[in-house]
Image 1: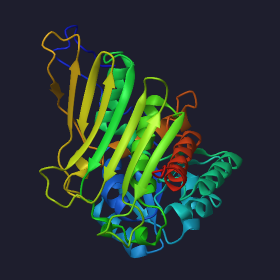
Image 2: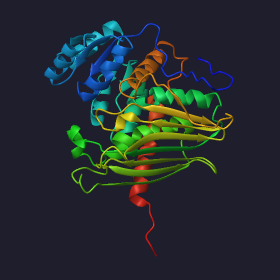
Image 3: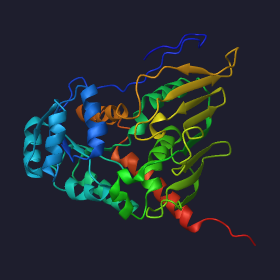
Length: 365
């Protein structure tokens, strides 16, 4: 692990996940925008071989292959992909709508390594079904909650693990942005949107630092200019103990320019604090550069310092979810933080937030 000098004047923090020494080939099921914008660029960065892609719309898969030299082939059917994957011991990468996961998982060979696109189903019942399938078929399986592996989250975790900011007692995630929901047409047919498809990342990252909360308070609501969609604004409070709390405020309807848009992750501890600008959500889909700042109370100057980041959430974080799965599949003694078992707890938290929004709140007496 890289070192930090005694006076904390020059900070060198890990920002990249560990890669498997002998990476396995990957077969991708699904050829949508997330594959084009994140999965394939990430696998190229990591020098992972993409054995092939299958999509019901073969033209999509063919277009992706033509644009990415590290993709070997396009499959004509799921059966053809599975047969080829058996021969080369490939990892399955499911990049599909959440309601299709269970159907595809049932067709994969027992004992396979499988990375499942988030969310883990559209309801807690679907998440439970996916978990049962993965256990029954003895998959080595994980969910692509990749924000955990964004360079700035890896760096923050190292600072926390080293005790540099002391005991963490407060985490706040703010997204006051304008999100072009029309880019994902399938969302307009769903009863749940914001928490399930966006803030689920924030809930998962908070869990990765603090574990499961004792209580959840939440409200998620529609936007008057996005009436065709389910809720697109959410506020959530996660209580842990007497001193520890996390908050998420997500407003995707701030259409008033970049000046007052905000997108950040702030972590406060007894010895210091970290504030990260999550650039991806600002001016989406182009995004702005992320930024990592920290302040330590034992620093004589007690001013905020900045660490230069080596990558962004997209596509760099997608290296971590695949690399972590492969390392655990090759060597089971290596932990798999984003396993389907762990991801199920994130889905439990999602469900608790929706239940709180539907049944909570007190009317004026």
